[in-house]
Amino acid sequence: EKPIPNTNDKFVALYEECWRQEPDERPDIHKVNSELDKIIDSTDPKVSTSLANNFKNESETTVILRNDDSDLLNLQNLPSCDDCDINSDKYQI
Image (cartoon, rainbow, N blue to C red):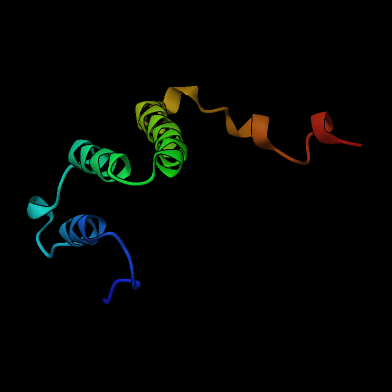
């Protein structure tokens, strides 16, 4: 895949590293975050602040979602089938 013209060379290198054939050779999220911070810091300060804030917010959301994944595995928290019956009187209009 060819990078878009004028794409930051460091970003291209990071992108290519993330798409390596062997998963064990790919960077973890902490390294990706660190490298993106470095790339952002080396760009225009106005742009870098905006990008950093957006990336930070998305990273925090990802961490929150990952932490919440454990709840998905806890089947005891799921409602019973009776609670989901759309034909029950509870859902009549």
